[in-house]
Image: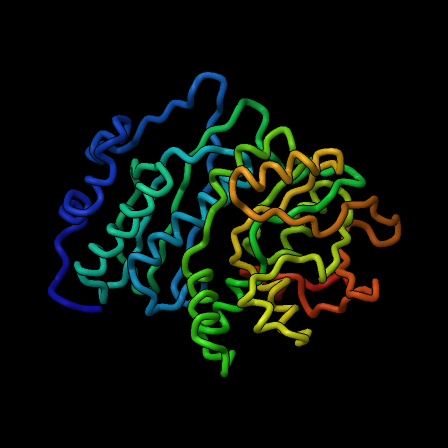
Amino acid sequence: MSGPPLPNEFELIARYFAPLSSAFAGAYGLLDDAAVLSPSPGNELVVKTDAIVAEVDFPPDMRADLIARKALRVNLSDLAAKGAHPRAYLVDLVLPKSVDEAWIADFATGLERDQAAYGVHLIGGDLSSTSGPVTVAVCALGEAPVGRIIRRGGAQPGDVIFVTGTIGDAALGLSVIRGELPGIDEPCAAFLKDRYELPRPRVGLGPKLIGLATAGIDVSDGLIADLRHLCAVSRLSGIIRASSVPLSIAARSVVGGDTRRLATALTGGDDYEILFTAPEAKANQIRELSQSCDVRITAVGRVVEPSAAEGSRVIVLDEHERPLVLAAEGWIHFGREMPSTGSA
């Protein structure tokens, strides 16, 4: 990855990143210290930032264009889960000195490709160096009707728990990259790896959940962990059936009857699907929305009042209606993985 010395940061910004801002007047061509963004009448800004770090959130040898696209998409996924339309983003790119100009060019190409796909524009950020790993921090800005974003804390007892797409592909894809799934056939391996490298933020569907969903969150830490986050803020518990969790054909072929691989799918994270709750009376509208957006939406369980003794928790039931014992609920960056509360 190393090559001739890099031009200074101002030259790099002018050469590779300023063109990405050209269609957004308030970015001022990245020639000023700040950008200006106003929401449409009746809307308010929704802001989200997430960072991804080499060796923590992606393999260090991952292609630069894929790193850029993943960094942007994981933030767009959060906007989608809040019901917000994405509009713009800022990116802080912190690079080791081993990175060459070709890497930066590829990174900018990845951003350009996804800007076109998702209708967003670069409006600012920073470029810096480090003795550590490649680090990319994106701040995504969207808009939603005033006071109507889909928060974590709105679920009601009896609401149905829904999830978009399929679950577990990304975690199993990381296992493929690590060489932990020997014998998997090439098409399945390629599908799962792609799902890990390139999330599909549900930006078209998310805003249409306003008025249907009572609470929502994107699945980044793992299905069980993120449901736990939603339930904790809503002060409720969640009960889901493992057999109802939607798995792709590739994931099903890998999981089979292996309970450890099933646990990986349920807790592994990086799916970036939308997990939301809604009243059962909205089920037909949700089904119609699934068809109109061509996005699979599956009911996987319900939220219920927590017991006084145990408080908010998530229980995963097997095919015999018995609680599954999971070693952990999902990923956290510090300390240990979130311990499971779904044991019998």
